[in-house]
Amino acid sequence: MKTRSVRGTVAVSLAAAGALALSACGGGFSSGSTTQQTTGSAKLTVMIGSSGDAETNAVKAATAAWAKKTGNSVEVIAASDLGQQLGQAFAGSSPPDVFYTDASKVGTYAKAGDLYAYGDQVKSANFLPALVNAFTYQGKFYCAPKDYSTLALEINTDMWSAAGLTDADIPTTWDQLESVAKKLTKGKVTGLVIGNDINRSGAFMKQAGGWIVSQDGTTMTATDPGNLQGLQEVQKLMKENVLKFNTDTSPATGWGGEAFGKGLAAMTIEGNWIAGGMKDYPNIHYKVVELPAGPAGKGTLLFSNCWGIAAKSSHQSQAVDLVKSLISTSQQMTFADAFGVMPSTQEGAAQFAQKYPDQAAFAKGGDYAQPPVNLPGFDDVMSQFNSQLATLSKGGDPAKMLADLQKNGTAALQGS
Image (cartoon, rainbow, N blue to C red; front, side, top):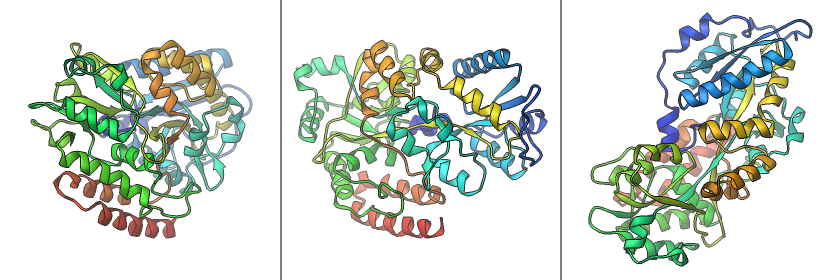
């Protein structure tokens, strides 16, 4: 699941070669008919945005096991550019039956009539409430969350010890974060390095009691005081030279994990995908803790995909049955073992935290995490805000950024 961050941007920004593979597939694709096949075998097509061979092979094994049990067949396509290929498939009325759907895209796909809303058929799986909210649009729970990640604080334990810090110094408040970041900043090492967009700074906004839209998604709340307080805290740490964006390190880095891995950051804020990224830096020893609380309490951000089912699939009943097998706790734990994702059910999240105590902070964040904005028409709105947010380190005005976000978001809401 790589729609979560800079690494989310790194790992989901995949290129355009799979359209030919998509157009060549038969079976699970439909010609626009929604008549359900209820007898005989069905060939389903599943399209994923994969992080690599481990994820692709795990999905292939899971779908093959279901196919063998049910007498159906499944073809798994690892898209080179999932968003582009899905868009082409939807436009051509030939979507895959099942596909990864990023939480931020639910409203866009739902409004266009591309998603089959089957969430009520799987809600007994007992998903984390935040995940149900992430995949709900205009009161409909559209699709089963397949996994999730939250943000946590990663600490270089060697640098931590060298600065005379102990477990008693692990920050639980903003003031404590500032204090340890100052002690860890030395030479080319910055105390805290984070990504330069809403997917990181947004955690500070949440900790101050803010967020971009109201809980029901009907009203822009970008100019609420908590949002400004959160961004001002980020800018304050920047002015004290104890926090940098990844693009401002020397040399510049592609994401917080790279700065952390290269020893340019003593701490970073990333999701549990960092475990895979840190395999490139075996000499870095680190631990993961929950993010410090802000004035309004704990806050983190949530990133997730669901198993989307096409509204135009002629095999919806079989697709739902396949998804039910994929979201079972045992299967989700198999995925966790194979490529590190956290299960989307409350039972699965608890098992994950118990089995992988070094990543328990990520699982705990699921209890209070903020899902992304999932409303249609917000891609351009968020892109513009992220462009402005990147100037925060160069003296950008957070109040103006939020006022522009309020204006642009309100216009997008009126058009949704």
